[in-house]
Image 1 (cartoon, rainbow, N blue to C red):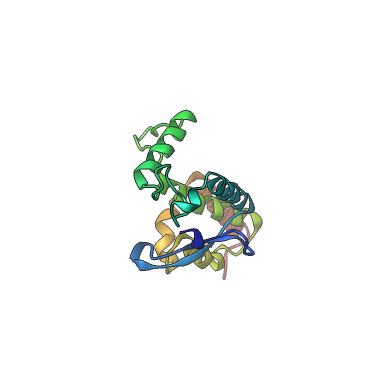
Image 2 (image 1 turned 90 degrees about the vertical axis):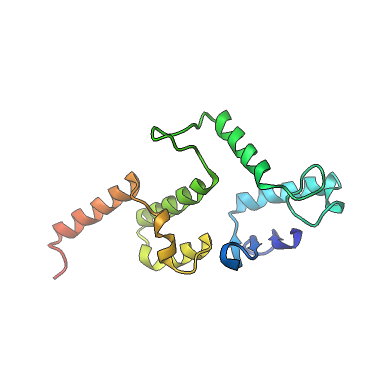
Length: 163
């Protein structure tokens, strides 16, 4: 709904209502994402789509966008970018974006020297999970995270471990 897109709040955010398991949450937006959504909102108004429906993302027919339309758009973008199946045969997917986001966020936190275990509850809420344990499957052993783990273990071992 249009009322769930808070582009003028600080920070700008989306109010996600009744998602999986009937949970709701506020999701802060990166400033560049908010700028793109503002542009879309202006275009939506200029095309007079705002009078067709209260949903924010609206089809040219005046109804809400359907998952199939998003999936077709995503598939076309992946194809245009040359993103095909992996060697294991897995195709790019929207849910893979969540996984990539979670792993990259953790990698950046480690790189910044942040206390990652203290931040995991925040990441879990952002992903829509109640507890960090529900987010762990996103955090599979990627080469980047394994490299960080190896560096931390080397440091731990060089310091003689914890007594």
